[in-house]
Amino acid sequence: MSITVTTWSLEQTSPDDLRPAAEPAADADLRIVRAEVPSAEFSRFLYTAVGGDIHWTDRLSLTHAQWQESLGRPGVETWVAYERGTPAGYVELDPQDDGVVEIVYFGLIPAFRGRRIGGHLLSYGTARAWDLAERWPGRTPTKRVWLHTCSKDGPHAMDNYLRRGFTLFDTKIEEEPESDTPGPWPGA
Image (cartoon, rainbow, N blue to C red; front, side, top):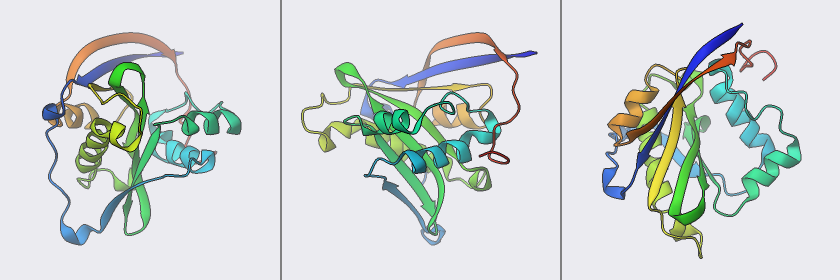
């Protein structure tokens, strides 16, 4: 059995495109921290915790070495949101050629969705995509930030991207095999 999946690609072509969300209230105790030590284990935890219930499966077959290689490339960054010390979600940035940065993964762990954290995390992660070259000497300054989302993602994903100033540049519709939800439980 298969399902129809629509994938939308969105972009910003100037840092002025970013329309930040309001910051959480001061008493929310939300911090966003860069995971500076590439860790396949931590990255896989974030990936399955955020994407398990919305069928993120593209990385599940990667070996430990493949995860580590992907995370260890110069300029790849993972920014993690913590609420009162607990991981709430993350943004993974992947710099590409000619000043392009892709937000390859972004999302919240289910228990943290619907609490007005996602807009702030996306704003913060997008700003870090725009200033990525400042942290990586020799990288071309960012000229474009892009990402994709699909019809399997949460119901507020597309609206969040549009409200942050991303614009649509491509749409694809494909049939994919239907699969069981890979997590976060069981088998996460």
